[in-house]
Length: 237
Picture 1 (cartoon, rainbow, N blue to C red):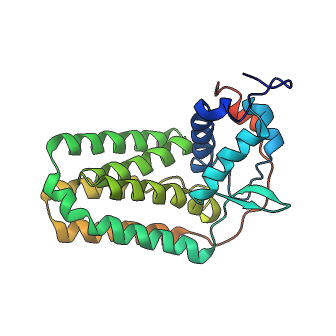
Picture 2 (picture 1 turned 180 degrees about the vertical axis):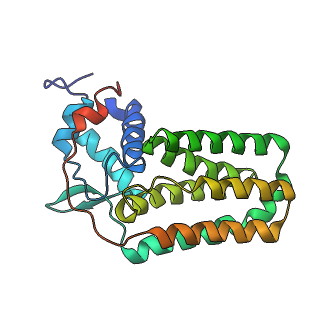
Picture 3 (picture 1 turned 90 degrees about the horizontal axis):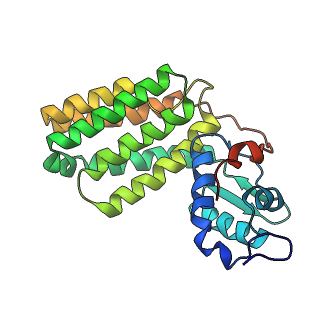
């Protein structure tokens, strides 16, 4: 059912809020909506064809996972992590992902390695094609899939959330050319997985995170109002 304005009501959104949530999450993670971008309810309501109440529900979900901020009188904006928060996100990833490597090695089989190699090749191709969005997506997928080998679903979900917030950090503080991770680092991780050397593997992953943090430039981004029609017109949600 639609309201008299032709927009879907909040109750109608129950089956529609997930695609809208995912569309906004993807746009944030892939740096199409950079930190500081304003997310006005009215503009999003028009683009997605739902009521402002429905959009508010989606924005609240994004705020709950710290991808946006909701501020009285200022509305919704894509989150801009503080310098301390940015460092803590990567420090947490290093601690969690490195600590889980023994379980990863314990469960790692040939099909797991083949899947990681495929992701790495796709990421390399994305870099060669200057496809920043794909490079970011594939870099995150590599880390998530690496940790998923352990079979620990709870930890994998935590890593997934942290990779999403890591993307905010890179968008806010990364160099203009920086997209995703260094592919040669991922190459090295795959080699060490094959060798089953936990000491070398742990050291390589720690170095990988240290390198990312060292490459960040802690400068703030300004506020912007993106072209929502261009970003989401073809989503069909």
